[in-house]
Structures are given as structure tokens and as C-alpha cells.
Length: 456
Ligand SMILES: *Cc1c(COP(=O)(O)O)cnc(C)c1O
Image: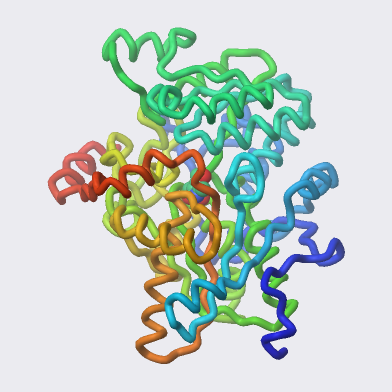
């Protein structure tokens, strides 16, 4: 197809929209390692998991053979508000970089939560409602997940209790008000409402909280309150399954115009947007039908793939959650204050971890100031203020496009633009004032944390 028959932004018609999520694990020869019970070290059973998570979500979590899960009609109806998301040709960026590469990005920031997280929030809220629950609990750090879940819960008339890391609660009061607009209750964590919160406050009086601590509070409330379950916004297989909508739409849009990508790039925190974006492409790769370079981008301050250990570890700091085998920096690892809050998790999705261990994808770690330089370049020529997390993918897409300029190769690059950065302006301010740091952990820092990995 000639270039001028391809729209600048590719949308899909209703008949072209994906009607089922794709479960990448079905095509993996080496399946991701199972979650283990932290007490017995035996694989977690559906029954054990269903005390914490909704039943249907447990079924999705444990299913590694069914390739497609039909998307319930109610969820497809909700998608009409903000999907399909556009696949945009970054003409102005290509021009700016003077590159022969063709750059496309899939933009997930077109909803109030400002990120892709709404894709899994709406699915998890739907199954909670189906099960007849009263509500759900969760934690949020930077606030995107809490906002997305609040939106999804208000749509299905479910109660939503969000434990927000205290430092974010204080620094991002606007996020909190968005969540309250959607009817959620937002509690700074650690709080006096839970046993674990009271214990942590007694031991560390002025603590500003952490994600691990907020998870422990949200899990305690879910498991001790009738009609409630806990939901999580990343890392889990079920979240990757819901996020496959990103990749399925991307693939449908590319196929519609006969565009064959050479590489697919995404930022990786817990791995959900990347796992979703690459799902159908990785599926083709696993089945031997096509080949792509697939690149995960992580912060140099929290380098789980590039410097982590592939081992069983706790998913939370409170060590109450199941053990997962993943690339990890250790559940006690506290990354330096990095402004990409969504990429500060110590571990990585067990599905992506297995694919990385099998050499099916690459990973790159990038320092923060270079990420913000890329963010600024992008904002100036593409008109979108990107989230710091998303800007990790922008940084590597730009690097690859510059490489193409040097070699003269006309490669097609697709990257995931996961969200917008309107609540991250303090980070942009630090960058503009030249006050941004690039702390990279030393080998000794990491070793101290690896020494505390569970041994068995
Ligand atoms: C949460 C978040 C991420 C990282 O989470 P993943 O599960 O790795 O996708 C990336 N970008 C944005 C905008 C986010 O909110």
C-alpha cells in the first residue's frame, strides 16, 4: 500500500476490534513458574488464591493452555468510551530526528486515569461484580492504578478502598481528588485502620510509607472484610491477559495497512503494558511465524531485568503474598527516588521473566535525565506530554531511530506510549531546574538485597 493511503492515526472500525484477549502462555513451551505458597512452598491452589482474588480472575491466573478468552460484552461496552486507542505515525518526530525509520506509537493516555491501567481495572471490577462482591481494595503509589480502579468501580457500582502511599497522598492531592470524584475512599498508608499499618507506625513513627506496605494493608482489609477481594494492577498473568487488548489492536491496525514492524519497544515496571503490547507478536515468534526484536526498557535506578536475579521472591515487603519466580532486585530493595513511580517495583511479571530467560526478548536500562530529555523532545514535536514511565520507551525508540539514520536502514519501530504526565510536573520541574539525579545502585547495594532472597 502506498504511504499516502495510510492515515496518520490508525483507528479500527467496530468489526475490526478484538473480541477476545490473547493468553500468551498458551504458546510458550517453557511456561512461567507457578506462584508458591510462602509457608509450604507448594504451588498456590485455586482455593488458596480465591480467598484473596475473585474466582474468575484466579481461573485466568492459573490457565496456561487456553489461548483466547472472550471479552464479556459489558467490558466491550465500556471500551466504547475510550477504545480503540490510536496507533499514531510519529511523522514530526521522524522529521526532527532526520531518520529513515518509520515510528509508530500506541497511545493509551486518552482516558482520565491517564494510562493503560484502565484496561485491567475494568475487567477486574467486572468479575468482582459478577461474583456479587460489595467492593475491592487495592494500593496505589503514583496514583494511576488507584484512579483507573476508581473509574471502573464507579461504572459497576462497587465500593473501592484505595491505600495510597503516604508520601504520594501528600504530594499528589489532585490524584486523590480524581479518585474521590469517582467515589473511592482514599487512605494514606500506613494507616491506623489495619493491624499491619498500626504495627508499622509503632515501629517507624514518621514513615512516609511504601508500596509494599500499602499492599499489605489492602490485602488485610480484603481478607478480613465480608464481600471484599483484593485487586492488583500489574505483574500478575491475569493483568497481562487483559492488557493484551493493546497488542491485539496494534496488530490489527498494522495488518490493516500491511505494515510489518521490525521492533516493538515498551517500558517495563511490573510488565503489564509491555506484556500486553507484545502478546500477539510474541505469539507469532513463539509459533515460528514471524520474528521481531522486542525490547523492554527499565530505569537504571531499578534494573530488574538487566541486573536482577531470576529467582523466587516475595511480591510485597510485608512477605504475606505468594512467592513468584521472576527477575527481581529483592523484595526489600528500595530504589532511589525516581520520578517514574510506575517503574519502581522490585520484580517483573513471571511470564516476561521466562521469555527473557529464554532469550526471546531484550532489555535496556536507561538513566533518568536522558529519559526526560527524550520526553521533552517528544512533547515538543508530537504534542503530547508523556508520563515519565512511558518516556523510557520513547528514549529507546529515539535511540533506535538515530541508529537507523546512521546506517540508512528504513526500519519500522512500534512503541507503547502508556500515558500522560500531567500529574508528574514536579518531576519535569526538577528536570528543568537541573536538579534531577541519576542514582544507579552499586553492585554492593544489589548484593545486600539479593542476600535476603528467600532460600529453599
Ligand atoms: C503503571 C504504569 C506503567 C508501568 O506498569 P507496567 O505494569 O509495567 O505496565 C507504565 N506507564 C504508565 C503510564 C503507568 O501508569
